[in-house]
Length: 80
Picture 1: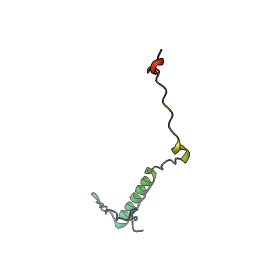
Picture 2: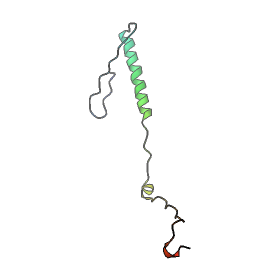
Picture 3: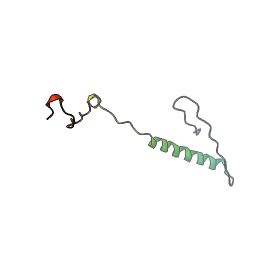
Picture 4: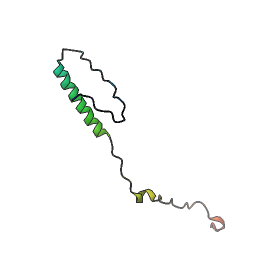
């Protein structure tokens, strides 16, 4: 496992820099850290995408409901 996933759009993924600020980490510890972080990132990314709701052809062709008639506007000469 190389630790780099292929990019979806074909572009090369941006390199990630990891810096140990305290202590000394072995290569095995760094590899384990990268594997855990990569898996956590992949899980977060998978859960963050929302499936778009499917809209049926019937729903797309429906017109919205008509607004109610305004009773304050008279109808021509027959306003009583």
